[in-house]
Every structure is written in C-alpha cells, then in structure tokens.
Length: 284
Image 1 (spheres, rainbow, N blue to C red):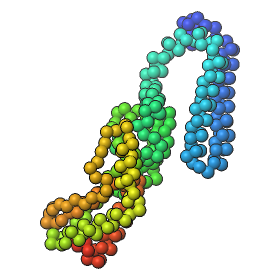
Image 2 (cartoon, helix red, strand yellow):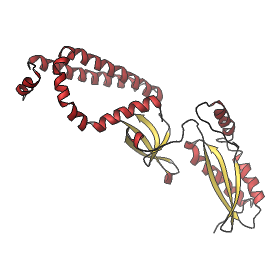
Image 3 (cartoon, rainbow, N blue to C red):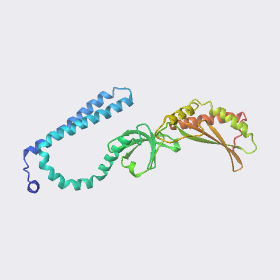
Image 4 (spheres, rainbow, N blue to C red):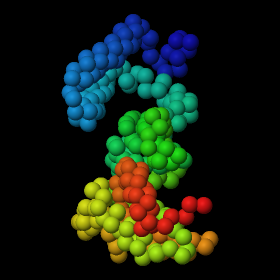
C-alpha cells in the first residue's frame, strides 16, 4: 500500500516519516503530562470560577503551542504529502462531518455568546445550568420542573451543533430576573380585598425580591442591546373569577435560581394568614 501511495503522489517513504510521527506522538504525550501537572496545581486554588478560567486559558495557550510545534515538525514534508491529504480529505470530511459541525458551532458559541457559564438555559427539551462549554459539546446540570426547577444532580452533555438545530431559551440572557406567578384560590364569598392586602404585605417584605424592581428598572434603562420595557416593576395581584372561585394571581420579579425558595416562603406566609382568617383559602 505504501508503494502504491508512493507511486500515486511521487514521494519516497522512508524513516524520516517514522521519526516525524514519533515526534508528533511525543508532543501530544508531553502536552498531556503538562496539563496533568497544571491541573494538580490549580486544584489548590479555592476559587472555582478563577480555577476554571485559568485552566481554559492555559489549555488554549498549550493547544496553540502544540499546533505550532507540529507544524514546524512537518513543515518541510507538508508539500510532499499535500496530494495525499487532498486524496483522503473527502473521506475524512464525510466521516467527521458531525465533529466538524460541532467544532464550528463551538466557535460560534465562544464568539456570539448565546449563553455563558452559570446561565440557566433550555434547549432541545433539555433544561439546566451551564457548567462547561467545550470544543465539541457543552454540559448542563439538569433541572426539573417536578423538582421545583432545582437540580436533579444529572449532567447533560449536549453537542454544540444543537445551537443551530433547536431553539434556545436563556433565562439569564440580558437580565438577571424573570416574572413568576402564584395563583391563590379563595372562596367566592370571602373578603378578597383583605386577602389582597395580606398578600401585598407578604410579597413586599421578602428580602429576596423586594429590591429587585429597582435593579430591574436600572438594568433596562442602561441596556442598549434589547428594546424592552415594562409598565410595572413592583409586585402586582390580578383578580379573576374561575370555577366559582376567586383567583388572586400574584406576579413578581425573581431570580430564576431562587424561584422555589420564594414560592415556599410565600405559601408558608399564606398558610399563616389562613389560620388568622385573613385569607379564606379554598380547601376542597
């Protein structure tokens, strides 16, 4: 087969190429050792975010050095094997098309930043917090609505190319807060004005959300990327009648990662008001 390739592209296959291949393998091996030693040192850094960013930067530098070294090794032989590369490139491209697609999608993610580390996103029916963005894939720490939009502890590995084939929902893109709602059902003949007064008292005294309206208003005012505005930023309660019940819809801004904590606190306070007969909940 070597003789056939030699005949096709007119090169002399000798020990020089064996040496180059061994040097290339040695370069890759040394790179792995260097990365291993660096990771051992980075573990000593207590700040996980700083540790991750340093590792990403060092890996980029080492990868660039690796490419340069391999290029210098093969520089004089590239012209001789260019015909061979052209001969097999079609087959390689066909077999590695998904890998190449993921590589270019990874570059797109790095440049355009549709999401970044720690963002909460939903893509292709997968929902979670971004914990790693790699060359060919990114990883999410899965969250589940049945768990109150909290972590399941499962890591999802998603190909980068998914960004081009599925719609992306980013709960942190642009702004840190989202609107959330709670429906409080009370009896038709109950004092709904007293119930609304009690709910406003509850919602306006929650430390996790009471300063958010001002922060959100400032964020939108200073934002030049998105054309967005809200008529209201403070919590509001809407009244509806449904199935012979009064439905008080409590709407408020919240950090998406703290939504379940806030909901639990509100319901605890609602139950206290129910015992005091300020909120006549439907119990049947």
